[in-house]
Length: 628
Image (tube, rainbow, N blue to C red; front, side, top):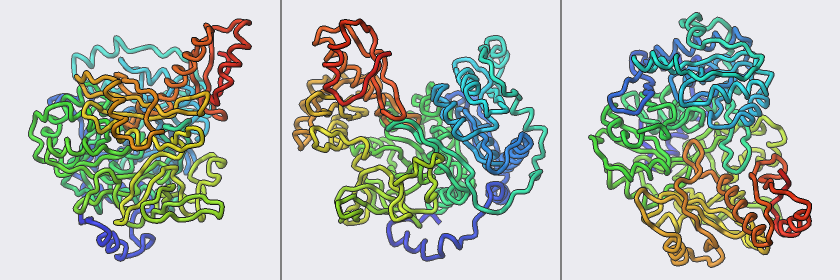
């Protein structure tokens, strides 16, 4: 039943029975067997290597996927992966990533890693999770994933086996013949044995597991955080939390007749837990276009035609993708679309209106986070949608707005801003992160996960995110919410995306500044945007002291503005200007992330005469620095 119009429906669902009493699969293999038994012949996953609406595509049925994940699980177990051991994979979207994810969770613990990370970051995650087996790409043209992962494996000696996936199988002649001739070499030496993923999987049983699979809840996945506020942390996800997310999708959003397009990466919880787990539960069909999803060549230009090709009923997007799509004409039949879902970041009101006008479809905004497995709230599918809010909590999810006071932690009254705290079946209480010190003070009342997001709940129970606690701009002791700046600038018709941060200031500690990405073809100027900010930002202290227009804002793989990237730009600009004004030739060579000190500016051009001058000039800032 796909009825979810508000709090009455939510209460009715919860009143059906307690969550703990629901008869749901307790193992990932049973979860797959269940959907294969109900919808085995129906399409499960489709992947296109290229984005054209006539380009070749490969589809697995639910029976196919069930068999392949069983084979993968048997392979991983033979390679030494027990229930507490880790199968990591560094892959772009393809059919194999779904097989690894589910097969890894059956055999042990699946650990997807963002292939856009550098080798050192990948290696750090591999060492943290103690991964035994690593699945990645065989060297392939136009991607350096294989080379980075080889270097990461050298830096993570715990990796014993590397299984290679060859994307060449998705090509047709003559391209398939050419790839072996131009395939890049992989010169990095590591000690792990290398095997062919497809060949090894094919040797294993598909009809049954070759090992015992106890019917008990346990940690089955490690997902690293996006790192928008610093170095990624590794969150632990249980089978019950993953099944809960899948159950929500089937109960409230999808059915077996849905065709869902999801150009988001499967190393992220949005695509994995919100979509793939929901497809497993509902028996729906999901289409993944190109290895890079929305970042793939031609995806935006061909998007509406892909909707027509696959008769898409449900569009999965993020605000940055919606912004790009609204700069292209709807050049195909999109009448099959019934719903669109946006997450990962707040959706500007004007962008919501543009999409609805262009497609005739209203967007449901939702909210989730890696630390809660994912889903927390949604604007009711069949009820009142408050644009700009993230809706009401899902069934079996409790949200409180809490604040630290001298008298302790208190619950905030209606429409008062505090920290959003969450309790639901996806929250792994006490051990959210693999690093125990990261769990310190992460929970209130030993139950409510502190999200780090600031927000409020209105009189109708809708949740509004106002910013990140760590993103607050502190100007001379005055707290400025960057969301106020971003909302004002996003209201300008020429603005596609905006990110507001605090730039270093010798007097105030931080001053507000903003970086803007314009819609295609716009000739809007900084002066125009600055005046718009003055006219629409009510708090005088929050008006940006600096605005810069970039060709493209740095973003995470799921389209969030990557604020550490903006902070690096601001630190470099402010420090270089201060040094130049003082007559020094010293400049910022790079800004790096230090696990203890945060962002640190590294300087080059050092001479003896500069030592005292640089110390005096940069010593006025709170941002740390050292010599390259």
